Length: 198
Image 1 (cartoon, rainbow, N blue to C red):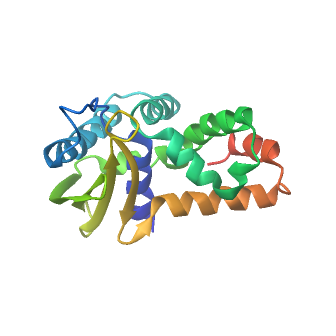
Image 2: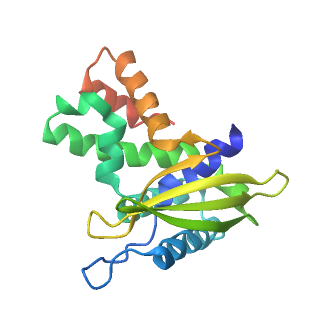
C-alpha cells in the first residue's frame, strides 16, 4: 500500500505537460507517451533541487495546479456534494485540495530517486488515451501503473490513474466524502479541515 500511495501521489501532484490541442494538432499516442516520460523527469528535478520539504510541497502544489485537470479532479473528489456547493466553495475546495495532495504524499517523493517508469503500451479509449507503464522503484518489485490523459480542456492533461487496479479518483472521492461526514456534512468546515489534512 505504501508504494501505491506514493506513486498515486506523484502522478496526481505533477500531472503532465500542457501541450495545447487544436484541430491540426490533437492528442495522439506519441504525445501521450511523451507526457509520461517527461513527468518522471519533472518529479526527479524537484527532488534533486535540495530544497526543504515545505518548499518542495509548494512546488508540488504549483505543478499540480498548472499541469493537471484540477477542475475535473476536484469536482470528482467532491462527488454528489459538489451539487450543493456554491461556486465560491468549489473554488476554495479546489485550492485546498491541491495543498492537501502535496502534503499528503510529498514526504514520500524521495522514494522515487533512481526510479523508472517504462511505457509498455498506449491505446486510444473513446476521446482519451490509456498509457500502461511498468514502475520500478529501488528495493521494490515492479508494479503496473496506468495513466489516463485527455485534451478535453484545450490542453493535454492527466486526469486519472490506476495502480494495480486501484483507482486514484475513487480513492480521493472516498477520502473527501469521509471528511465531509466527519464535519457533519458542512462543506465549509470540510474545506477548513482539508487545509490542514495530510
